[in-house]
Image (cartoon, rainbow, N blue to C red; front, top):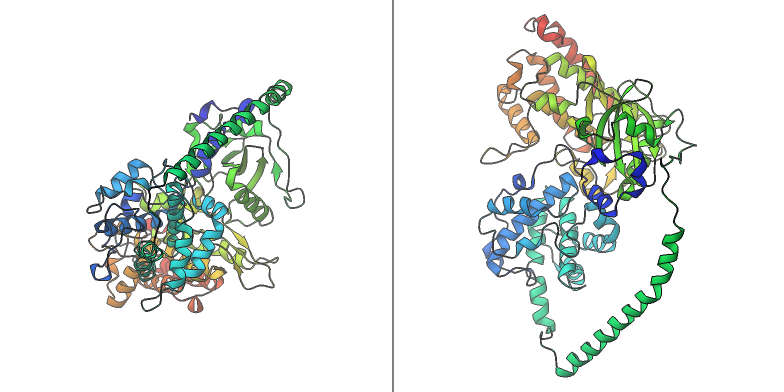
Length: 568
């Protein structure tokens, strides 16, 4: 699709397949590709028996590569909210898995029948009952626990239909695994229970042979003819009303109007017309594309008053909840370190959020970009800005607001490297009378609090965990997990090993070139490990901010830091 050809005069005519395309294009900016997730040891332990997953695989020896592939899908779903990959992504993945080809795994890819195009949201909306039942029945699996309830729930879903429904069944399984992607013992037990369950059950209950009798075939043929005849009659009956309806249809308006469904909550947030949005972004020109948020693409633009802005486009099919959440939360909170929501527009096919533009990009670009560099003091200042923003959200008068997606790509930088938190599409407001609320797990792989993944309790401590991970990245300049080594290790585990050994040189970002305060570095390393530790030991964000301020003062007084490295 050439998005630059869209304009206000034809937005009401957006084809349904384009709407579907944008609805499933729900990706996280920092997510890894599927092929990068297709690593690790085999899941299948021969001593536990083989299985062909209810005949879905061509033979029992395919269980091992298939289970590794399922785990790769689960990790990918955790990162991007996509369930099945494209055929190209799948081919790259299977090329990294021994004996991955020729097993029938190819059917679990985007573009096949059934649920192959489903996103995480689709599974939750359309297969929520099956998902909840499987989750409830399998959540307590352990090394010594019985498989009975879990297997029963799985077989109920498995027997629900044809080959297309098998894809739906695996879509449910992938989403369930994605919620506990780091709990590999539980996933191994889940595999042990499910890989042979359907096979054994079919033998036990005596599955009917595939051949049918002559009478059954005759009845089936007659029934098919009657069904086809009924469909033809129905189409003929409906044909004339359709013609009359089409004849009465009025031509589309030149500009689709925007209305304000948030009149009671929007406060000072402006309602911006659709025409203004398209003029500001040059019809969503590809040259103005600057990034991808939780629920849509982001473009830079200039409003008619000359103000430079960032515009997030949200396709209403499936993501309107994100639009409502951002408007309601950002419209009532103002802070120097929160990105300002200038206005919004809600149309029939698409909605837009208009923010202040942060010219310096995001923290991820500066930490991981080859030609970009942040001084030690700049890193501390950015951390302090984010801590102040989170402290403000967590102690808001009307109740705590949990961001739920703290990561470098959501930390925007203005001139002078002032940091601002952005993207409130996953945020959750908690009434001040409550300590937490329950919700489906949301966030980005590597930044999600493990305790939140287990109990589904949204609490401010989950933001503290995510912020602790960001602190580790500010110290090391490294991504969440290094996939280039023989044994991949998470950043938090690397940090714990460094703290035990005392050799911080193993963890310091080489870009700093030795220009940092060792005392302040150790102080922040300890702070980050507290933030990513058990929930009961995590500090509140006001205490985090206090430690960061102290580290900054120590660094500014450090005689080994030259003035050029203290300032921008």
